[in-house]
Length: 99
Image (cartoon, rainbow, N blue to C red; front, side, top):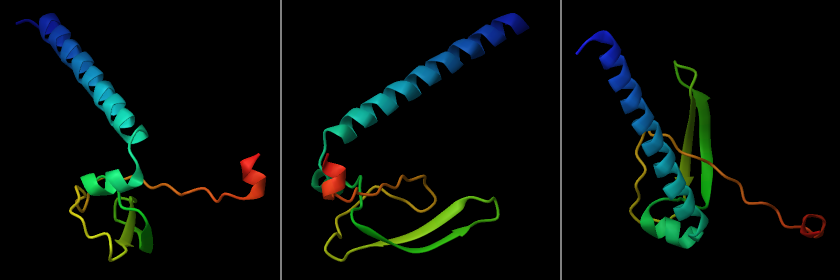
């Protein structure tokens, strides 16, 4: 293979990887949108509620968050130390927010 062929092959692979990433994200969003907190907990995808124990930054300036979950939620889960996670906050429902 010559240089232009190699570059074209790499561009094609990059395009396929991007499509795969987009599809995986779309499937994840569909799964999360149609699943209750209880079901997410059961599948090991969600800890709710949690308590933030400590926050700090590591040497690479990445945010580190230590959390704990309540004792009644001891189901197995898919989380691992060092992996990326997302946080959310439940909205307070008040008469002003119902409008």
